[in-house]
Length: 437
Image 1 (tube, helix red, strand yellow):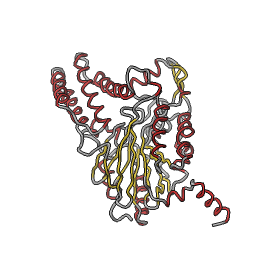
Image 2 (cartoon, helix red, strand yellow):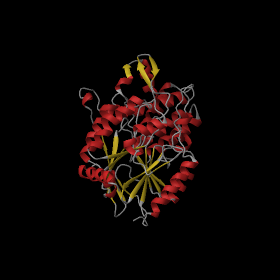
Image 3 (tube, helix red, strand yellow):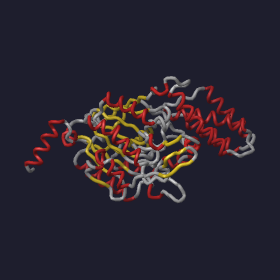
């Protein structure tokens, strides 16, 4: 090592900001947040019909997103984890202004405290034709970011520290500590977005080349006796029955095949987001720890105590319970966001079932499904006898008009409101194989 490099390393270590020293220390505390969907206030030139229409089809507390992230940041700084993982959908719709705000106002705050942050894009974050400025009843497009631009903006939050990068995606590998590496996997399809048709693709897949990249990097890590942790935006394991039938865009394509291959590599844990739910599910020995959205009910984040010797994550979940801006509101933050969540399912029922179904029956079914959805978003679902009876009654009323939708509605309501039996919010998960030292 030359003297200049030696001097830089020593000074950085003394200041406590050396990535090298951070990698060599033991990992004790982590945190995970997801789907923060930060919307830069500058995008709202004037509230009006255009933004109201957007919110009606995508029920998130976007206007409150800066304040919500302020609250999450304050609580994470108090916990002071060594590592924070953000599993995608960093912005409302990939606006450059929102990305820059996230870095300048939030991530830099963590960095200044010596906390290392690693991000991965979500389906909203790159090459997005929905990046718009709202001016009352109309919108105009604003600058979004390319894949290269994303990596440049987040060079201090994963990409600049990467030990290896996938040439076919924004996937990368970093050293978390002396015994653990993180593989951040980009499964988004932003190259398929269509500006002419104003289409942003929600679905995801792991490219064959990216899967090969994961394989190579896992083999390298295991050859060095290191454990592997993975993170990705899209789900790698189904979180409720029929998810891959009814809402497959929230899982990577061919998820069973991919989950099986990744599990065979010796990877035991993948942190995900996308569906905005607090849920933990396993398949083939791979555990998908999904974290809900900071801007949606119930506004959760995860705090993790790491036991390197045992190879376990002791996970507990917290929520943002209140906002200063809502002090004089007639409803609490949790009440408002839960209303947003349930109304989304009511809208789905209203638009999907046949027109011959009376409005009262649509509303009854939508209300029950909305309640089931809220249970799933919060995690640890425990449907009451009263809820189960209302679901059964609503389905019977709908069956008078459409057997097909009554069957679907009853099944979805049952599966969303029934937990897999694995604790979703507070749990202890093994993340290492016995052979990892």
